[in-house]
Image (cartoon, rainbow, N blue to C red; front, side):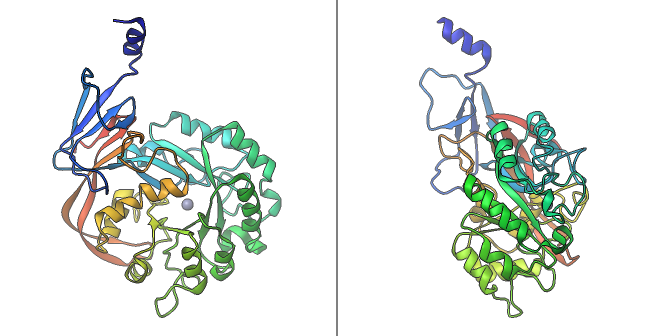
Amino acid sequence: MSALFLIEAIGGIQVISKIINAEIVEEGIQGSEILIRDGYIVSELESDEIVDNIIDAQGHYVSSGFIDSHVHVFEHMALNGINADDIGIRMGVTDVIDAGSTGSSDFYEFNKVIETSQTNVHALINIAKKGLVANLHELRDMNDLSDREEIEETIAQYPNKIIGIKVRLSASVVGDNGVAPLVEAIKIASSLELPIMVHIGNPPPYLPDVFPLLRSGDIVTHAFHGKKDNTILTKEGDLIAEAKSAIDRGVLFDVGHGSASFGFEVFGRFIQKYGQYDFSTSTDLHVRNVDGPVYSLMITLSKLYSYNIPLNSLLKTVTSIPSKVFNMKNKGSLLPGNKADITIFSIDKHSITLQDSLGVERELFYLFNAQKTIINGEVVWENNG
Ligand SMILES: [Zn+2]
């Protein structure tokens, strides 16, 4: 045995795993096995390589790890923070994107969440310095916004952790400032080549003033909220012109279910008429909606699945679509070369009535259930219940 090989073996570097009996619905992937070396998916093993772990996925679907692109996991610091692993790996989610819980002032503390979670935690930095740490009306005073230098310095200090900027644009958040915080954020985001996630809600600002500002690759979360006077749809159920123009130029709509931000009716009409457009599925999970109406990303996906969206298309909304819009490297696919962060789940026949954020009920016949969560090629959680 060569010295080098010995060091590698002791260091546990050459870990080889194989997932067998996998039901895979991703286009371009054949067969039912996935090979993993050192935390990455590979196309084949050398003839003398020995498999260390066999992961049996019998009876279950296997997907590139689910990405929840809107959560709040600044536990003990932000007003609504929840534990990242509780809603991440323990719910079949390999990657969570915290949407603006922290701004530049407290990123040092947020980095501890990133460093101590088994779930991959990414951040959209709030354009407000204090994020959601001090209050939930963080954009009422324009002096509370970070400037370009503050955002740039934070990104430089914590490389590869900040994947975009968050701006919450509803009346309670911005006060009299309208779209001004967004205009400032876009200047900064453009110079740093980052996407912006905009939260929409109660007006003002009104959507016809918000959408024209957004660039290709920006994200609108809570896109399917059912709040009167400020929805993406006209009375007739068509997209308002500004929303249609936005998705046509590559603005991405995101679910961001939340306590108050997802309506079955709006979503149903959108899917019926505009089902060919990409969107992303996220939960906006935090301490106050995890016990309902949101519960988990699996429940949110179950709700959307009830609109007869093909499974392959629905899975893209939590894999390749978010990984692309947030420029996440080696994520979002089971193809060789990607990180072996993987979600194993089942879709079980189960009748249940669930509510949207408006209290409207809908009967579902299938539920997504998390079975195993794999990070870096290793099972970090499995469903024993
Ligand atoms: Zn949120």
